[in-house]
Image (tube, rainbow, N blue to C red):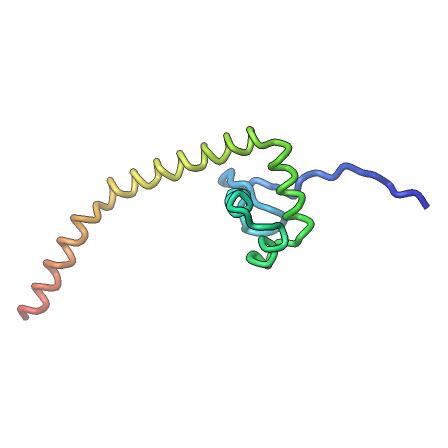
Length: 112
């Protein structure tokens, strides 16, 4: 009996926002790579994220190791986008102004 050796594609799919998800889950490539780089084994990753199956975790790690520079560029782009969104939100929703408004409201309620 011969074993058919077939190259399978990585179980990675971008969603509508361009975020790469693993398998048919909501677990991101970012997440798997981050915990893998912390020294977590594939088995532990599958345990921590039960929606992932072990084969997809191994395939994702293999993809990362074979395409490390491209994945790192993608992760850097995601970090930059996150920082831009954080700055935009802090500008739109000034936490200091919010705190002052909440304290003023509390003072008004206590005065009544």
